[in-house]
Amino acid sequence: MELRHLRYFVAVAEELHFGRAAQRLGIKQPPLSQQIRALEDDLGVALLDRSSRRVRLTPAGETLLPAARQVLASAQAARQTTRNAGRGETGGLVVGFVGSATLTLLPLALRRFRDRYPRVVLTLREMATAEQVRALRDGVLDVGLLRPPLPLGDTETINVESVGAERLLVVLPAGHPLAAERSIAAERLAAEPFVLFPRELGAGLHDQILSYCNEVGFTPTIAQEAVQMQTIVALVAGGLGISMVPSSVALQRRPDVVYRQLRPATRIVHLAAAHRRDNLNPAARNFLAITQELGQQ
Image 1 (cartoon, one colour):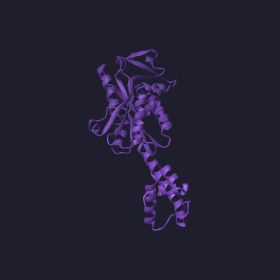
Image 2 (tube, one colour):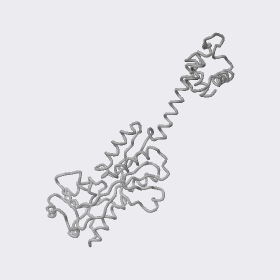
Image 3 (cartoon, helix red, strand yellow):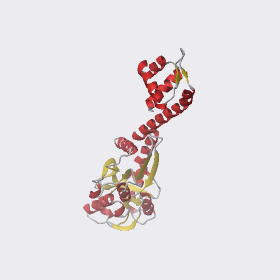
Image 4 (cartoon, one colour):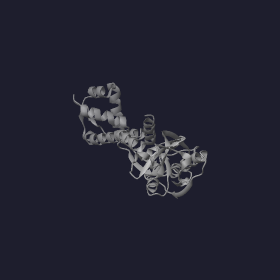
């Protein structure tokens, strides 16, 4: 018994007329009659009474009709579910993100993704860049929003695409002597204690900050470490030191700190979307497409 046999049978059973059923199915009447005969031969029973001028269902046909409708409906549902999954319209998606992504790209990407793919189950995990790289490598994350560059060994398995660019700013306590200046010569920060995140959690951005300081003539003294950008800013507000942060962090305003541009201008730092090159999750491809859309705006 094939699905097409059941589809043909249901059409005849509902029309009770071979000609109308054939027209409904878009086929000729003789092949339709042959297929119904093949179904009856397969089942070993007559499904239709053709003895009168009008086609009627036999008791066996009456029994088959609701079951056939159910089988066809289930097949159609399975077909649609499979198509939806293949297009990334259903299923699950696990996204990792650095805290600063919540100030720019992430909320916009989530809103657009939710609007387009409301049936995808989203799981979000705030993680440092190094943690995301490990999770991507292990297949725990589908997509990571992180700060490149990645270690060379990971670039073979993980693809990274920039979705945002910004400069570093210096963040100072509001009462700091340099807070009154609109921009600050970087060498004037040489004697200041720094609050930074541990290098092992984001080597790329950490090295960019230290490299910039070295280029202007000093190596920063790291007095305190913290994992998240908002924690770093809070420690700066508490007087534990100063820091350099991506400019997006300045969007999270608070009265006890100030953000200032640096002279010379710092290098561009990037927010990137990363995924395993062999990730076959269609929902991940859809999310990445949205991050690229937003990154180009």
